[in-house]
Length: 125
Image 1 (tube, rainbow, N blue to C red):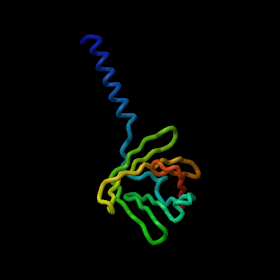
Image 2 (cartoon, one colour):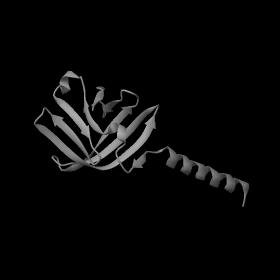
Image 3 (cartoon, one colour):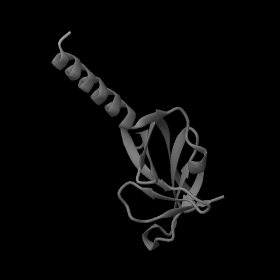
């Protein structure tokens, strides 16, 4: 085999391995640090809460109303020390597949951010 063909094959193989290794990973279950109920001090979400269960995402409004959506897939990647989870779920009220990005800042007092929103949510356990 010619040297330039070998180099080309090795370069393509390295590119393939890098793209597979660096992309998001699909998870089989919801990671334990994300499980539970989350709330925020942001005034516009004063009566809102968010809960992550093993098989569903729940958005709550006050004490009487909650919307539960079954999780269909979870993807994970790390971004500069922040753990990023993409939850794919079935939006039952709207009748379509949807997704939500959850950014977890781990530690003794973990915080999450939902989607592109700036508000931090804290665990209520």
